[in-house]
Image (tube, helix red, strand yellow):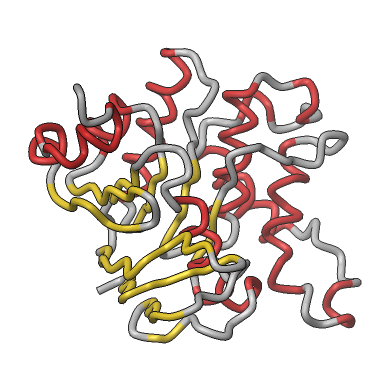
Amino acid sequence: MLLEVKNLCKEFDGLRALDQVSFSAREGEILGIIGPNGAGKTTLFNIISGIYSPSNGEIFFQGKSLLRLKPHQISRLGVSRTFQIVRPFLNLDVETNILVAWGHRFYPSLLKSIEPFRKVEILEEVRTIIERTGLQPYANQPTKNLPLGIKKRVEIARALALRPRLLLLDEPTGGLRFEEFVQLMALIRQISEEGIGVLLIEHNMQVVMDLCRRIVVLDHGSKIAEGPPEEIRSNPRVIEAYLGKEV
């Protein structure tokens, strides 16, 4: 199993943001994490990626516990993520943005951090990522001049530069037009076909239902459903969580 989350809890000043959440994810699987606003989805991602420590519970990645590891240590194990709000280096071009992410493996060592990154073999790997993510036409453009859909691709490309086995995508299609999110869906499928597991937080139900074979539903910090899209779509608890009891 690629990722195992067991009885995960998180409290903030007495407020329980996650309550006994358990699920697992496999290599090459696109697993959807959905739920209304405030359900605990981003808190879950923040715990898996090491930004928060859980109040209780366990997380295992490829059999290794992630508890008490720092974000950079988790990243080095093969877990990378994107965020709801894209934050590329706006004055750097696309290639350099990805090159900075690739260089993460040098950061722990002061000696290595001063080595030049623009070596032929490094640039070849970065340009392969650019090709994989369809960013060739924008490689030498400053990211501040790019539309949101392309900036989202840059975020995914930077995450791929970490050589992940598990990629956490936090609302990757948020704010995109139809043509843009259809193109991004194709990229996410391609990533999973390469054997990389994907955890996907998404409010666009068309994207979730089309991409995911399995979906986990959170509401008020608790898991209320898990299963294939056809089951989730008709689950009374899921319908109630999104639409209310009267409906």
